[in-house]
Length: 324
Ligand SMILES: [Zn+2]
Ligand SMILES: [Zn+2]
Ligand SMILES: [Zn+2]
Image (cartoon, rainbow, N blue to C red; front, side, top):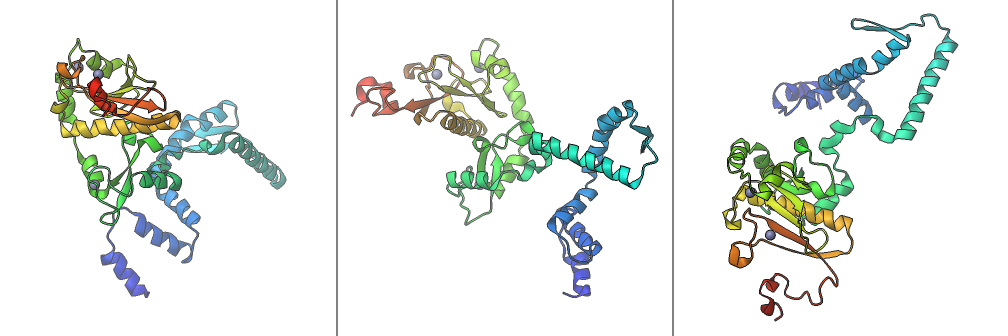
């Protein structure tokens, strides 16, 4: 590549979605045309204003305060100085060595949590986790079903990180780029108003949605343990909006309920190896056995031997028809 080609690329060909590309080229120029990825990352960090602001704040809140109190350093506005002014080279080396030793000891005892790994979170889905999630999804988008051959697939947090969703196996799913974008762009403000307006004071599930023991939740649904469990871990997944009939569920709620069912299922399977299957379903209408008039879906873990003859499963709602 010639100088002119590089200049043309920068001036007209380059399409930027962030400052990364010119920053990388600039860093390479500054380091004589070649650099390690680690050094490049350090240069990126030095240009990341949000990180600099973050450490300015940390510095003021913590070590500057403490060390000033002990008379070790002095702060004058934006300037910070060590109070011991005169030291020999040997003395400086000794202090530096002591500092490094203290840092090492601390990192050994605390592990990597010494540093704030928050910012890594975006990509912190480890390769192992990514593989697990993709494998489970059989290479398909969880929303539209498109395969990895047709579209790039992302690992998505089912409950978004911004809403407290964790980067753990249970909370991860595979989405195609289109579904991921749609999910992100959805504005849920109106729906929250509907949920608030439909709230019923005397409904135990409406009450639970605001102050009960909630296992998992997203904008439209939540999970809680059944008060009269059919088996250990029996969970109810409940839309937040008050309505009685399962068939009045909206698509948004359906997706939300399904998301929570999947999270809870994975959680149960992980925490209890005796679980080998599930029954899931809803009772719609009094003749079908519904007793609480706020729609809910049962997720019932099943274990070998929990009933004499499990054959037929949900067919058992009409007991003499269960065995066929
Ligand atoms: Zn999709
Ligand atoms: Zn209700
Ligand atoms: Zn029920």
